[in-house]
Image (cartoon, rainbow, N blue to C red):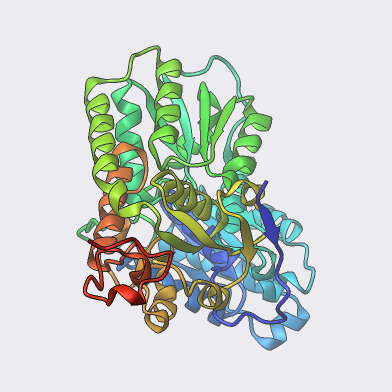
Length: 461
């Protein structure tokens, strides 16, 4: 079992993690006709909004209750009600996803009670707009926990308990926050190749995929339909991807009796094999020929790439599930994960990361411990550490704001793993290193005087 080292520093030098409210807002954006509402100050919302806009290069419909100093002291129920009614009147969303922040959470307000009172008192004004509350204080976790809490709250609030028969050949997919738009599109295509249909919750591939709707839409204009969320309990099976999606899967199982399988990662040959074997069992169909061909292409890419991965030292700083996925990938390709930094400590997947130890810390820890690495793996905020250390950076996760098209990058299943091999191998190729130290290389300094040869040096003829 991997040793998990908890943080000892009193402050964060260069933060690695993103906040829970941001993760929850991202999850709500993967639901159709939704407006995420951050219950807190304008600054909290503005910071999350800037990160999302820079990462996706899209307009992001996030609103705030705009708590002031006075309302923070006296209570924010009135601000919450006013914000909900304003959003309803102006945007007419299908869903308002309310994400609390540290500002209001530290006061200890009864948000669930306030929201229930607003629903009852303003039922006519709200009409068919649904309200979902996710308790996501900034100090409680990171983007993974926020995403998970929003999906869990949505299932608990909207999904109906099962009544009647399940829909044959229909499954529920619960992707983690570390999966990109391109990853989710690839997952859907793969599921459909087996003759299955899937409700994906949340489905950011329909909302943040870079399409232009042709007119101004004040809500998310794609993603999982509210009716599909309500009927999620009709699925014959649920597949959760990433340990932080265990809570939503268990909520669905508890509410509607849907059995589930949790897959810690979908990056890599073995992980993809397990996923396709599960789809084959659920559908009763063999693995399609085109997917077998993709597997063969991945095997060839692994053969071509392992020369460049073997013996390389890698330093990774990421959210826990993404850290596990990347560490497993590089280890399988023959590299050594010399440094592993996790954003938070709560995810049990950290104990299985293929590294000698995992330190819960920040990008300052990465810079301090990764000086002997051949490659850094982190999001775009790791670029300063990479520059100062003179080590190349493979950008993964959220946010990546200094590269275009990151939402369409794929790193899962056969195709995504193949693309990841090529991307990392090309970085290694652009930064060559000598695997044998010069003083041990018998092909160097061949003209050295015979008498100066040490006993450990090979005899020259």
